[in-house]
Image (cartoon, rainbow over all chains, first blue to last red; front, side):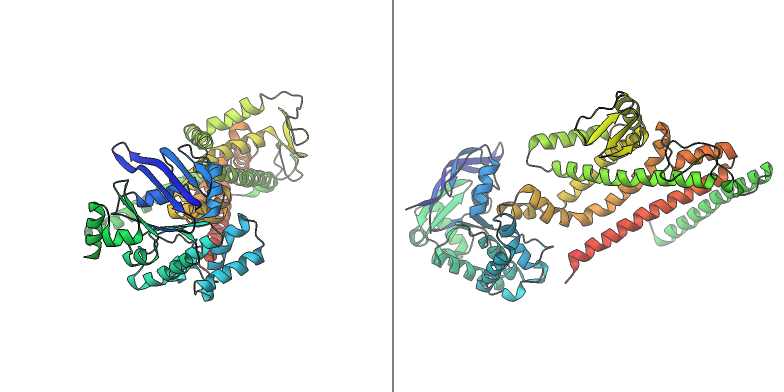
Length: 247
Length: 299
């Protein structure tokens, strides 16, 4: 089985007394969906952001799609990773001054040197997959949160990534808009995309995740396959968290 | 403060302003009567009687004083607009450098801004003139091949010859204002949410591309108003050109006033010229501002 992401005892501190990541070890297999859970401040966002170099690591080694990263942030390596790893943010982070179409085509045209026409065709087909092809000429502010997040997913997919990172993709959405985004992610997972998803959506995790990583205080508490995690989690701390989430 | 108190303050301020204006106008009238001169602009059409080291259009000392003043105005315009272009280039690249990923670049930019803003502009102009340019050898030398020829007689850039005075004022104003513009640009970049930087970076874009296409366009509404006030500062500061003998509007007016004794009229013309100039700059910036806002809100 090929490995998409491999983290070897990576650590990170924001200040002397606070370790955001504390000797984290994990592997993500190609084609796998890994859901990362944990209370707020547990380091799950920091972890996922180290995978494409948005956060640096202080110690340890990281290998993402075969490219090595360590504590000295090599910008060239990071850029190579970012071209092959897509990311979706909690706050969507669409470019507000560009049309939906330009949001999606800018990077393929300028970074991958795609022809404008090809990039636009690809963008339109991605928007159709997301069910929002009719929004292509609008600005982000004219779309609902759920639509914006689907554009953000399309924007990341337009670079043909090998891995997709999702950092709490539904946390900023109105409850009635969550499903449309999760549906898009389900489709992506069933198409075999390698995904790392930080989320609090238990239903999604139960249904789509292959494995669940549970973190607390910067440490990996438990890394189990999804069935085990939700039926009889190994660690007391995980069980307590699941209890709180379901009640 | 309650409403009626505020109302009283306004009345007091208005009365105070009227009093000051009254005193000034009275002084003017009294002086005009005392000297028996009256307001007159006849002298404008008499020969200027002095030479100008630099004039964008043909000029000799037998031409009218008005023509001499126009040459001064054109000289001012020349150095101000070249200065605005150069200061903008310097300021934008320095402001961007302060948010660069390269620590050396960040440090150089911070050093430039910190250093230049501590030193009075007049000293900087004198430095550029006496040390940097008059310190050049009298025989031209070409450090960059045919691109630029330097000597203490003047600078030849791609065949265009600039006087040492012009070059000193241009560089002095641009380097000084560029440092302030860099701060304006840095503030503008910081006003763009972090998520925008993270989004373009996570798509594999370079810093330069992200800056040009994503961050700067969103920073413009925050940058433009402060930028236009920097341009106005540069225009007003250009009057310091007299210190290095550049024949700008202020220097020519000063000579005219000395020769004709027409201080009041001379200053009135000077004030009006600068008003016109700054209205020009302001108007241009407002057009730009509106165009930017429109482009960001259309559809």
